[in-house]
Image (cartoon, rainbow, N blue to C red):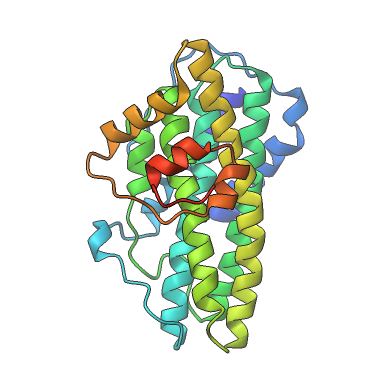
Length: 267
């Protein structure tokens, strides 16, 4: 079976244990894979988690408020688990969707998928310690919908890694700071896991930055102007962000971009 047919099965698989086994088989053979293809990729109609999660409008997803009870802890962890699971499929979809690119592109996003599986497992273990499991709370499908709308390399790299995942760098830092204010020993376990994720997500955003700028160069486009043109198209009313400036700079953002995202950014 071809690399892309394997990816198609992987991305659509909703049996998580089976999905991970399929991935590791591919991962262990990554140096021998044939990435050439003239076949047209399919656009997936639903996310793989639709088989075990109730998908609702983002406004109906349980709010993350407090950390005092097992349910409140679970709501926070469930939201993070869902992001990590979604990120697995997004990394695989980047490999699947964009054909006949340099080998490094596919190795980069397979590596991201492998990281995301570890992140998912770490947070899911903590979630299950609260007495809940993935699928016990409703979720939204914003990331999946964004992937459906970004069928070209330039917009995909701009919106998924350089917008959503970069936003995750900001959000992770905020969650850690809130959890540091509680004396709950369980909060320390969550913080430890989030610190690992934060460290390893920076290279994920950097990979998106690299391939975004690679495609800008290939199309003879100016990266900053191009990035914000795409962002403005996708998010017409986007608001200024509270930024994790240090993490974003490491990931490839320029100070000029950070000042546009938030004029108060110190860089």
